[in-house]
Image 1: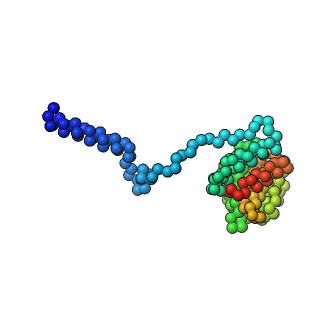
Image 2: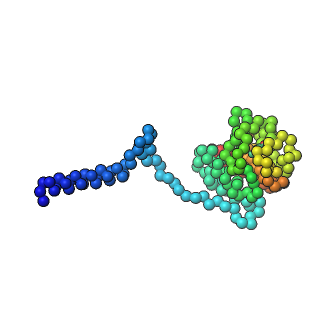
Image 3: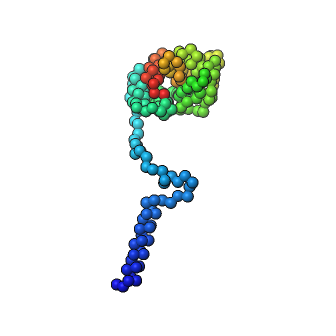
Length: 206
Ligand code: SME
């Protein structure tokens, strides 16, 4: 082996090293290169397998729903994330709903929050609709037939009955939980009591 061979070996090694470091540090032509972002906290993967027990009574379903909501919001300070997960749990646990979610009290009117269902009206003044009545009075509105409720706002034409429960924190209504069903008379007094208990359980977390 002479000097030329050694030089060739060195060149090869250098090329291979360059290839390797290109692979480890991808080049990026974006202005804000994502590869320059320092590593973040590790991704915590996993699925939440909250499902109601088959054959559970209405009271049991609500107890399980509330326990799941308390568990999933535990230690999470972001109210929007918590409302989003609670909306998902409402849709998961309660049968025969076509809309489930939150309106938040913002500067004296209700503003759409996280929900599951069709796109809905964004702002509701307190003198309008079932939601406005619940927020204004601070009391649960259980409406057997939405068509018979004066001022009902139809966000989804399929809705036939509705349950709206205020979320109260420090004596003030901070949001409402709104549930819609395509079935007339879907919501019982037990459902109202269950959602009221849920609202109380999450009032500090949204
Ligand atoms: N029906 C409600 C409006 C909100 S939607 O149902 C999502 C009301 O009358 O206030």
